[in-house]
Image 1 (cartoon, rainbow, N blue to C red):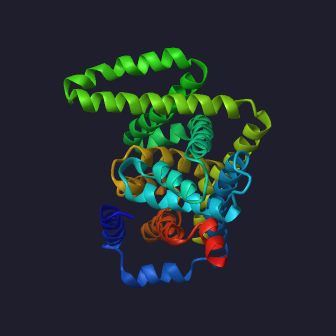
Image 2 (image 1 turned 90 degrees about the vertical axis):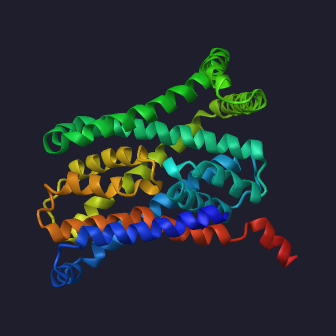
Length: 341
């Protein structure tokens, strides 16, 4: 991890404490402690299990995709991938560091860079597609509530959806309209020439064309493996489902047994989209605000609402940072095998 990333890690942890302090500043300490002692630990264990299953299923997806082209790839190395991804997603703006970090981990594990890129791109496409599909269903279920309660967030939700939809359309265009898409991308890149040097422009153009070529070649290879893709879609569906269910189990832990599981899950899908468009790493500030705005109708007690928000952020964000830090320093299997021999 670079010095810049280390600083970002410390800043995000400090910012988390600051946001939590701001949220609880008007709550009596005795009331907060009482609410903490009344938490049902069993439901919290279920919530914890959900986020761990989220990580595990992503590791399984990575393992299946990489194993198809790299037979000696181990499941131990696959587990490192989503955890390191969580770490770098959480400390970089717009989660931009997650994809490169995954690639580095796979290359460290002995996977060819081209094959690793192919697997990650296919995983990314399926993941984005499931987000879009889940959003459409959630929109049908929860958008009226969103407009009625916090209509200001509706704009962010729709904007987040459009970003994810644009990404999916762009990737599908590369897969099915390769020549046209490549020409279109190069045409759209031409105005950049006005603002940067010729050398930099040509380098960017070359790198972009290489990425498009690599993605197309590998997508054609994997695209014929329909059984594999179907398996990845099913696993990704359950992966996201476990993530979306976390607020529901937190509410059960706080004693809100009348919570509507379908509505709570749908609202968490909408929060997921809001977080994705905030430039601050981890969507800090925006995530907490969205959670409080969307769930305050279900959790009327101010102290418990803040507690629910903090518990949700610990599980869905800070746990990933901590586990990712351990995964980052863990040695890949091939290095351990060398040490043994």
